Image 1 (tube, helix red, strand yellow):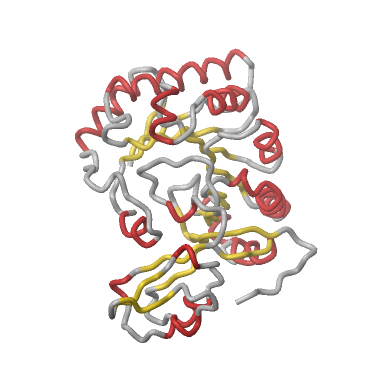
Image 2 (cartoon, rainbow, N blue to C red; image 1 turned 90 degrees about the vertical axis):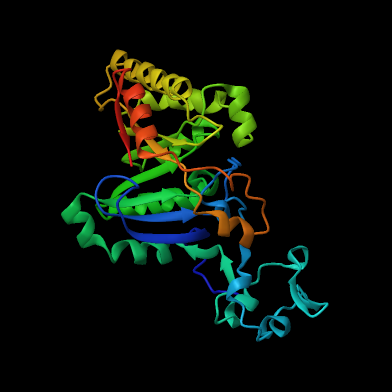
Length: 318
């Protein structure tokens, strides 16, 4: 169904607004997940954010067989073949009419067009929690820099309201985009998945040179920075790989010190891989290549934390 929006305010595509978040920056936060990503990490926990456009997620186990979606779809994307209900994704334009009729939530529209006013209404409703916890709002994704005007407007409005702002970013884009967001950002969380550029390309779809160049420029700003590394079996879950990342963070910390920047040294968060996203991949018709991977144990993570801490940096793990 087409929604009316105020054309005087920027708008964008949002997959989710998560309130009372405690893992996306300091304090209690509202995390706005934006649609569209320029990496394709095969283990990604949020594959619904890859495509910049709205999509239909299909959960067959919830279907009650009412067939309301067949008549609701204007493109015939829902059909009966051989007595079985079939969804033809190639026919779908993600209008969401089928999802609106699916009370069992077997069909879900992921990706909602929202204005800055829409988003701010939700952010401001939790102002009291930000004030008491030192929290604020975080733009995540996907990649916030891909919806630059929308992201900038949300961050700017939040700062004007006295709300702490943060971004989670992969840093794989032009520096000019990051520089613009930094104008209205108080706190930065950014990924580093692997120090070997060829392996980085193999695992994420892109090399790491641009990411590293942006990290170095980020270090000579006054923004507090947390680096995040998902610890994924077969990708980087070894002492050598984590040690290389820790050495990189140490060198960036030294760069910040040498530049005389009045900002804390960067820290490293090691985040253990988990398989909770499997249903998301299936609902989007995607192949989940990490389906057989095991979550690193607490003991394995403790070893990697110790390795990283040996490089003289501050390290945390969940």
